[in-house]
Image (cartoon, rainbow, N blue to C red; front, side):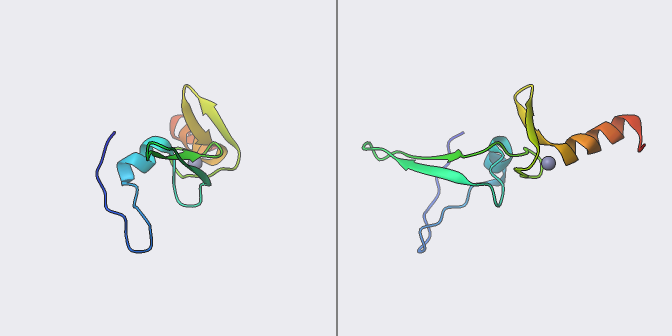
Length: 83
Ligand SMILES: [Zn+2]
C-alpha cells in the first residue's frame, strides 16, 4: 500500500485506518521508527498487537493474524454461544 500524506507542523503524520487495520498499529501500540541514508523512514511494531483492538496483552499469531485472548474469546462465543 502506498499513500501520499503531508507532515503536520508538529511533525505528525496520520496513518490511514486501512493501513492501521492491515498492520495492527492501533493507538498505544509501541513502534520503532528507523531512517536510512536514502531518506526512507520505516515504522515497525515492536511487539505483536491484536489486529482487531490493538491490544498488546496475551496476543498470539494464528494463520498470520495476530489476535488477543479477548477477541479470540468473542469469536469463540460467536460460534459456540456464551458458556
Ligand atoms: Zn483484540
